[in-house]
Image 1 (spheres, one colour):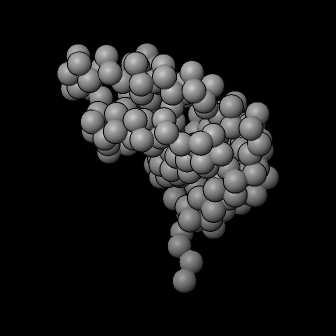
Image 2 (cartoon, one colour):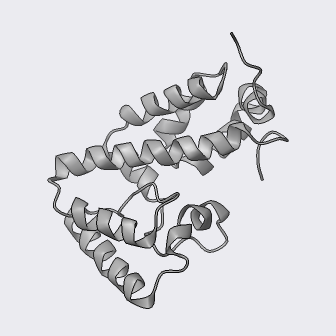
Length: 173
C-alpha cells in the first residue's frame, strides 16, 4: 500500500534544490545533514524522509554536529522572532524565576563541561523535565553525551521535518 505524498512532501520532492536546501537549513543547520537529505530525494512518504534524516544525522562528524548545534538557542532563551524555537521551548514559558535562573546556571555549566549548548528535544517537556535532563546529562562522559546530542538532534529534526512535509501549501513560511 502506498500513500499519497502530502503537499509539503511533494514540494520537498519537486522544488528547486536551492529552495529545498534553504527550507532544510531551517530544520537543521548542518550543511552535511542538508546535503544528505537533499541527495536522497524523492521521498515516497514522511517515514522515508525520517529514515534519510536519521541516516544523515548518524553520519555527522564533530564539526557537523557543532554546526547544527550552533543554531539552537539555550533552553529558556528561545531565539526572538523564531516561532519554532518558541514553540519547542514552550515548557519554559511559565517557569518560575527560580527555575529560569537554575536553567541559566545549568546551561552555563553544561557549556563549560562539553563546549556546546545543551541540546534536548524540548517539545512537550516541562521546565522541570528539561532541568532534570540537563542535571543528569552533566554527569555523562563526553562520548555518551555526543550520542545523546545525536539522538536529541534526530528527534528535533523529525518534528521539524514532519511540519515541513505536512505543510498544506508546500514550504512553510
